Image 1: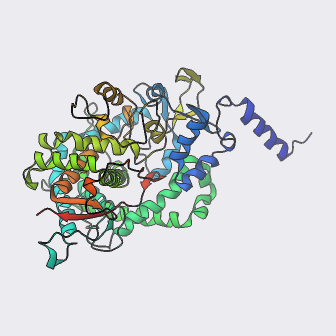
Image 2: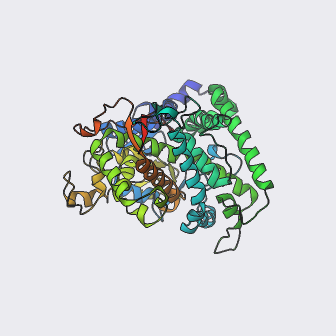
Length: 513
């Protein structure tokens, strides 16, 4: 008896729908049979919001692909991402670094721990202080370019800059935070100065990263689309953009390796050349240094630029938050020279609360970080799950779960503050409850982002400078917007393509006299 192809397909459908180990979990019908459901939403850029919608419709456990389940509970976070979790990193991350694995993509736990011990030294507090002059120089340049927007004859007048998009550059003189973040990360990672804030020559790199990530985000959900180069046929412009970025990266690395090590060269690249595993004494090979520093450009610049764009959106929408953040910065520092890493910057707790709340509502990467259950199976959220199945928790969905965060769509930095008697929005007990809730824009556990403190420090330093030096408003704001009644900011929306792609907000700046 010959089994026809159609019979095989029918048997496969019946198995996936009723007999697969994950068949008990509800979810979108198409997702039971193919990874293309997730790939479609990755292509659209709304996968993080679709996952949130699925949880609203199907509950805490959602079958989002034939062999994948999303979970939206606090207990699952520990079981999937915590120390000692009986899972490994999903192999599909290899599409982000096909030549050699890095700490973001490698699935082997022992290798990851070894690499992490070395790399974390480059992000120590002492290392960040050494990098601060390069960071300050780029932020000062950004502020200088903003001042140049004022017509020369109006420098002493009460003039605002023309409106410009914080996320994208439409003209040479308008530097968006995307270019600031790129200049920051290439400076601290490689000691390079591409000056994309002022000059258009290398701005294509930022555009190439964004376009390339559309294809990569699809492959993260359905890696088999790469078979036979099908992905390059489906996304030719994204593949070409990826090739342009790789070419740029190779030239950058070649130039950096040719640079002789000196004490005057202070960047993460040079730190990694010197760092050794404290347990084995081993260092990193040239290939390992290359693949790690390349990741910093993509992940680091996106995290910073998306966070800065989102924070500027929320602050300039809420007079209450803006006035309090400005008052805090301008009473903490008496001059721009005082705005440095350290105790004073750390004392700006409301600005930090504004930053944390922006990351909660608009995490730069809102999708799940998939994990594969190791041999023998494990318990996740109180249920046994078989080996080989894939589980994850959507960052955006967890941050917008009303059980975790009351009024999750409301921008309320006060929820991050404890024992603040002047806060009228919530009681102290409620605020204490909030800060214990699931919050992981940088992941948690042994695979949390190694560059978290650098990213947060850059954003805090940038906004301390901006709020100290400028008055800021939305381009469509009335002159007296600060005296208007506070309204709830709409969500700053992202397209999730591995990194967050964004538009706006359109802002104006006025130098303080």
